[in-house]
Image (cartoon, rainbow, N blue to C red; front, side):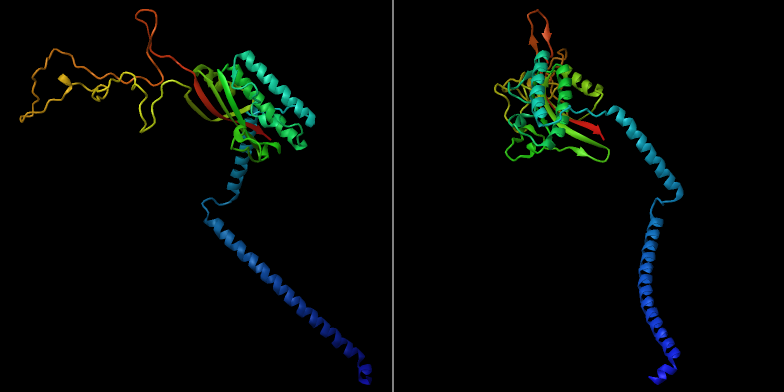
Length: 343
């Protein structure tokens, strides 16, 4: 102790030196760890830079300016499309009671409009895809907004169909949009399998419509969707005869009584193929010539009659010499329509 007292300054200096050395060792290991992490990051950046150099399009300053220009052009194109795809405004419904009243009122108005335009509805209690909701009294508050939107969209679709004066509306299917539509006990006959399509720009609701009409009314329907200020996109359309003569399926039996213009026992002859005298092709002689026994050179060649047109019939009218070559019948149309609403 006496030595320490005599050399207090030296001992203090040694203690401070030991502490500094310990701190330096700790700092060294910390810096080594950070250095290894930075080295790993530099190696990763080097690998990424090499991959960028090997890409067909390098993110140079010129390419970055081109990307900015393309992004600007895309935004301008989206703004132009919004002029032609105006969103259908939803009905002004504020609460559940208002939703119940709007369902009753709109479905009644749909029936009155169909009656005024002479459009036949399949059943008297059809609710235009809202059949399951008409059975309910209470609704979730979260169902008000999506159902108000779908009611407005169905209203616009029916306006186009009724304005075209179609013959008959069979049914409409819509996408499930609320909690009541998701219940396991609801019938799937009123809902379409496809759900809404959405992204960062727009949302599209699908509707499947099946109706009967003539070709003129179908033209008016498609023109109505085209001229509408709202965003309607006809995704798919299928037309089939609603009745009358139809060709049998492959391998199926012909209709009773055979096809029109067909006589049992008639040899199969292709349309436009020349018949030989007696309906039988004569065998060739050794010289390669066909015997001309019983052949009249002044007789014009006969041809098989072409098959009748499917879906049409030749009907003789009361006027002598007047024949109806084509009698149009209504056909059944199945149409898939998307209602596009930009956000």
